[in-house]
Image (tube, rainbow, N blue to C red; front, side, top):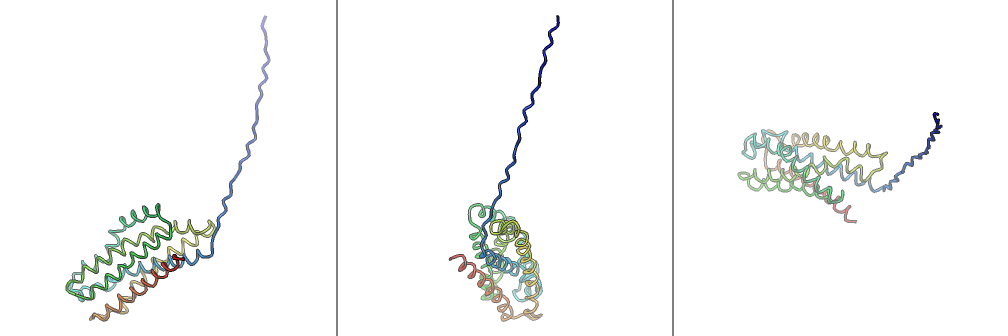
Amino acid sequence: VTEVTEVTEVTEVTEVTEVTEVTHYRVYKIRWIQLILYVLATFSNAISSMTFAPIEVETSKFYNITTAEVNALAIVFLFLYTFGTILSIWLSRKLSMRMIIIIGSILNLGVFIRLLSLIKQNNSYLPLIIGQIFSAIGAPFFLNSTALFSARWFSPSQRDIATSICSMANPLGLAIGSLLPSLIITDNPSSKQFFILLIIIFCFTLFIILLIIIFYSF
């Protein structure tokens, strides 16, 4: 006798409802002012990096230094990019975006140290290279923080616009920085010409720094 047992398979169907969480961003109109200040700070840093590159021969003649030493004033930005990047990333994890912009802007004051090169032309290279070193360390604070700046201050629909605007500041500064020295320094450079060039860049940079400090102090 064979016993046949009928087995009924029951399949339990569970309906899963996927819940999508919507994140709402609160944005402020003041973010556009911050964007302008960020662009200006990046712009001024780029100008300082290109100060002596277009007038290599004239700078070498005026300061009585070699062309290799003149080129080093621009190349130092490339050599210190890695160090500045590490420093800016480390600080960005500990400080607010405002402090990152302020620190980067203050490092741009290396343009003031360069003015000291006009006091003694025979020992003028040290102030030049030290001034460039400060600005070079400050460059990654702006170049590497573009996406972070957009993410912290702009909604997702506006981040691509903000990032694009910030990215244009550096090449525009390089272009102006390449043009300005050639308009001021002649084939027979004088102290007056170099003073005018360096003081213009210094005053512009100082103006931007003061704007940033005043803006973020409120």
